Image (tube, rainbow over all chains, first blue to last red; front, side, top):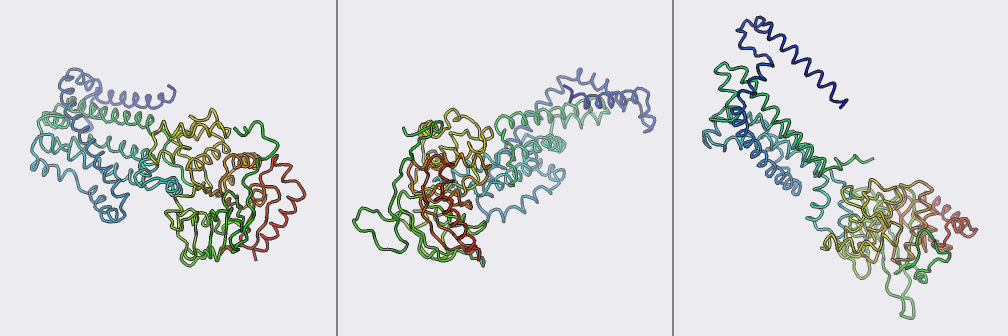
Length: 256
Length: 285
């Protein structure tokens, strides 16, 4: 409990300061805007409650997109990492492309994907998968490469096939690395969902944010952002719990 | 059953003492002697420009324990990798049993590396039973195979322990059982106790002496510790500095006799140790 005290105190202090600044119109006057454009935390909380069905419905849409896109990137990322690990030729050929994939500005290709794939869940899945793919692949690949070479040698003397070495030594070694990548991926996945929804959609938290801010419903905008962050934090925490259960041995200690 | 570590037998189990066969000598008369278990002829190995082993001739008889000592970095580990079939020598021939190919050697040699290399995510018994698992046994079958050895080698009750919960000595025991359970006729031990403190090391040498008495195998034991080699082996080959070649060969005065302390302090043992140390120094050039 003690270790939660400090972060909790910071959050409470910040929210208190914000509440005060909003109530006294300090922010609005400073920015020369109408006071209703700067919602106090209490107003955001009110919106969280009064808009709960709206937020839940749209949150559910976004959650489905995030889970779908993330699952897609896990399958693709792990497959890709294993393939690149097993074949140095493939690795040399594809690694630069892998890095290049991360430099593509998602905001730019999101509208193109909507043109290609329509307004449904398709383009969102692709955008999220594209964002998640890089951290998952790179971390898993690093994990597979971090295997102790003496261990691989020893496995050859224990009658192991290439496949058995991969399954019994390399995969478990890489598992904690995979989780590091997956945690980064799931946290940025919600951003991908918002980009996807902005490029064209009729539901989801990103859509709700866009609509509410266009209507100057700033309290609702902040409420949607709050739900979005909560979603990302929840997914991150869930992955951490799974990691502790199935990859408790952690990354390999460096050789002495 | 033979012995338990709690109650060491006073009388060492004589293990398959084979009359020494001279290097390069003809076949022993009588026809009772089987061909050498391991034979190296004119073996040389180099990593690029670096010559590690030079003109090495070694013969190990079936059931014999051959100790190999040499200064650090003289290519002892490379020697074991060559014998085990993990590497092909740059020149010369290595035969294990009937087989000279690296695949054939891999099938006949069990290799225990310097570090225990236990997998942290597996229990002690699953670590020990890796070779049966790799050969297609189910997890339950593999555990059933390993279980009696845990009883026999002082690890009873530690089957389900994680490697991180075991002491250094215990981890080496599990690593040795893993090597035994590979079920190969030849054991290659690479400085098995180098990472242990002096006391645990003496204890483990006694333990290995008993283990080798119970499970007689053709063994090559590589170490930089002359006393360890002389105590555990039937015969000791002294290697020179890199590039390694054999500079001397000694017959161990009383291989694996228990108790260890009395054995290694006996006059015949200490004089053999002095001789080996002198040979080692000579090999330094």
